[in-house]
Image (tube, rainbow, N blue to C red):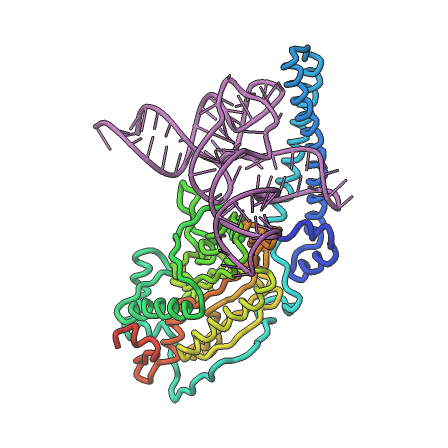
Length: 416
RNA sequence: GGAUCUUUGGCAGAGUUGGUCGAAUGCACCGGUCUUGAAAACCGGCGAGGGUUAUACCUCCCAGAGUUCGAAUCUCUGAGGGUCCA
């Protein structure tokens, strides 16, 4: 949720920022109008309510003195009707405002490059040089099948398309990667947490998946529960509607969960292999920080994910997302893209975002800033998507005969 | 599944013959006095959101609906927790 007070105060600045992210200017104008209308409706209601309270007090006084109240009661009855009307007006204004406000994305940071889509993202740097192959490298699904690591057909049999099953070393590697990542993150000061894979509507509204992206979520029939699309949701909402003490910050957490996405808009994309699955494993980084620390934490999180890839000997690059590619809640995002020799391209494997106070405002996560209660900044980043990491290991570490070498750092986790 | 009780501020815990209650008290916390310093003691402050230059004022005592001039207090529904029965 954007800061509506700020919108009223610095309308031109705010709307310029929102327009960089492609928000329609009339919508922004409308938001401001609605916000002012609500304020007026509230003021009107509160005045009437104050009268009502005063008269009720007087009423009690008269009763105690055993005086006549019929005249006062008549006055109060009239006022009551007005209150009902005023309250209804306020409710309507409130609803109108919320339906717009909840669908407005976060404002991008000033240093985020302008752009329409992923083609306008800007590369920051490359890490590690892709290896030279003396043969034509295969794509991961071929390797996965040849080694018997991943079975795509049986995943479809059990569920539907975009589900897969891992066997043997494939399954072990997943487990090894999860443990390796969690331990790696712990050394960087991220506390491990284990959270529910189902969350309620409030949690999803807190982090911004709802109300706008309900179609992308799996919902449990008959209950207001959803399968999490990312651990960001339960972990960030851990402190929803709380006021933290200043010395509890920054809160740095890491969690492993399965993630579930309908991939509603992704028909025809990455249909082969395990780049885009309905269910996948992910280790996530989440941080809550004071506003003036969030840039620093952001860098730490990017470094953490990048160093993880380096430790796994995987060539990758860092990319700043342009305004057009930026997610709904993000003020700034850096993607990490891993080199896939089979496709001869870099593919997203991690995404680190600073949402500033956008999520915190929705989720009401504050901290005691001296005497004031101030919204925290929330940050999240994958570290990493496990399936895609496995894909990267297969493609980068393949030998001519199709066998795959295991990264040194993982061997202890495999009993090797 | 049936019966019954319960749900208050960071925690504990008053307040339920409806009348001003955002709510006693204790602990915790913050500031001060005292002390070389700390502890103790004493003094003061101390829920949240909105609103205001600042007051005023409005809202919130699990959630929602209702009764009433007025509800933390009464009624109904739902959710969480406890106890008993099956």
